[in-house]
Amino acid sequence: MTTQAAALGVANAGFAWAKVNLTLHVTGQRSDGYHLLDSLVVRAGVGDRIAVSPSDQLELFIDGPYGGAAPHDDRNLVVRAARLLDAGAGRGARLHLTKNLPAAAGIGGGSADAATALRLLSAHWGLPVPEDVARLGADVPVCLHDTPQRMEGIGERLTPAPKLPPCWLVLINPNKSAATPEVFSRLESRANAPMPKELPAFTSAPAFAAWLATQRNDLEAPAIQVVPEVAECLGSLQDALLARMSGSGATCFGLYETEALAQRAVTRIAAAQPDWWVTAAPMLG
Image (cartoon, rainbow, N blue to C red):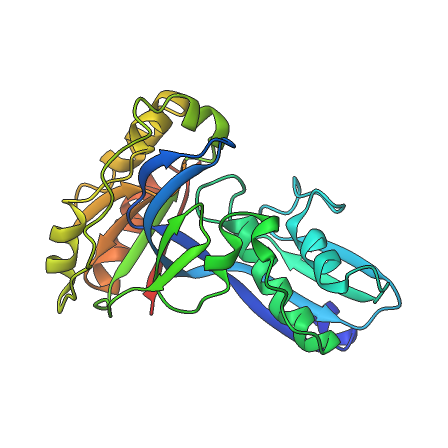
């Protein structure tokens, strides 16, 4: 907790963990333009931080390494989440958002922020989280869950995933954003095979990585056309059990069996690419 936040009398605070799509199969497209997905989604133990404290009006304060470009108005999903929960009653709260994750990066930063804001404000105002959170964004429902999920449809169909083995993730972003509409526009096929109907259980990280290698992120190739550095990020993870892009990019992840191996990769990559965002984090269960 920051000294400033403590002085304000913070009621509650929490982390908005990064969302990682270990798989992302594009299986169709609806008549309204929304794409149908089949994705195995986990959280990584790195994220933005949100603190809530009392205020007579709704206000948002933003800082952190990636806070400079974040909007303070209704373009920010945190503000929109607060307004959705408040439902026009005019409740007040001061939200302090520390942006540690790059924006438009394929790791659900804004969606995770919205989900965490909903949780914190729900406790702060004594209100239940509304059911229609998907109107904030397709990734918001999955970001409200604490466990790995299989996400289908346009993000509204969630099923708990089988228990996954302990793993570490190295997350890399070349500090380039990949515009989701442009990535989807370069997708050659929108009717690809889903994951198997039943997801297996795994007892080890190598076995898990071997299975993941038989699955896909259908947006990876289109994203490389938009942000060529994605290919460089993937190439820098050559010592990982698996390297893949998350979401629509441009963040890539490497799957590692231990923290030591993951931290070693971070040291190597950060030295070679000092302008990239690179971090290691446990895969949260």
